[in-house]
Image 1 (tube, one colour):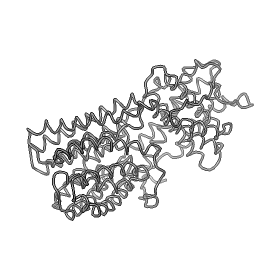
Image 2: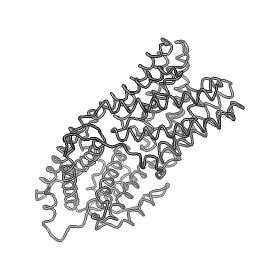
Image 3: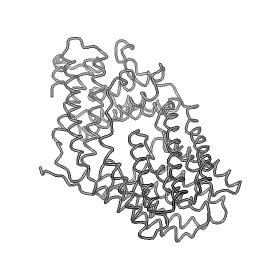
Image 4: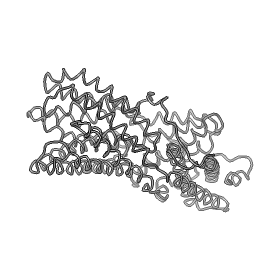
Length: 551
């Protein structure tokens, strides 16, 4: 194999539509509920020019929909504070200088900080893009220092309302996020069980199941550690999913799917029974708390540098072209950066296609919105809903709604020439995508291979630890459970690290064979621990458990 790897940039499948998210309507309805009251109030007062500041707080309602409500309350609060902090920096900078180069530089540095913070906290969709859109736009809004406190107050008030909107569903379905995560794990386990562990695609199904189960445990962990009957019932279902992962041939996939269906709505959580003789031995979340956590610092540094460099260069290029809104190019670049160059390329293609189609939609809708301010507000609400409803199917499809919405927001302060807006948006989209991608290629992530080596070491160490416990006549149940969870988490991390590294350019050849062997031996050891714990049927060969633990 060559000493370096070069990845091709695919076009096939980039625009293919996927299935909608299970909860696509939640962020779509939430953002409308969060945006509508402030904007309609400003419309009644004749002050739509202030809508940009209330939108900053209202758009926080897009975050946290996959998190349990206890965790969502904290996450949304931090999102609101982060949004206000970015807005404050932008407004102060705008009031102190009109130098476009300085403002673009400030925007690029903030974009990098926002990208790093969102990835480090795993806040989830829409990530840093909304934060960067608001803070970058505010950099070029006419401002004085005396106006800043009032504008921040409007954003904070709208953010508080968005927090209430985000938390409101918890009154009707308090365990909704945990139930959905568990259902996804059960469905993934059913798909793997259907392969019997040997059919085509079983390795990919196994990795997807392991990731879904790990994510579900993390969801239960985020919900807190107070005793809760519903949570304990969900834990038992997750253990059943783990059994399917360990013994797919002995698992009924239809039963797993039936349990997943029963988790919809607000009905009683289906009973899976205790897979052990004693329910007290179900360690669940308590054990997950003891599992080691792996920091993200190493993998975030290249993304931060790419974001800062790409956003700055995109903004500067836009200025050289004489475009009046360089922040559009900056935001386009910020939206591209994914885990590796290949994914960044895919996002770039999706962004350009979606934006170009979006400006056509804006050209068609602009005459209607100019008839009355109410039409402008209602059109923005419709595009808000459409963006969140469609973006889960493919990023470009959501961008078809995001683009006209962003263009309409610029008209809250005053009516503008649609032709000029379209021209500038197209120019900034192309410039931002091209320059942003060039920056992604230039800032190579050569440590991706090192991270695979580290992930392999962690997996091998976790597997050996589990194997030592399996060799004991009577291993302590909690130690065995912690070892099993640690190995499962390490395998999930190895697969994610390998997938990210496989899409990077200009690096030494990846140890693909070692990764495959490590995954195979790791999952065999996982299966052995499940059998040893009495969760899955034992093989007739009494020595199979020890044999499975060997590499």
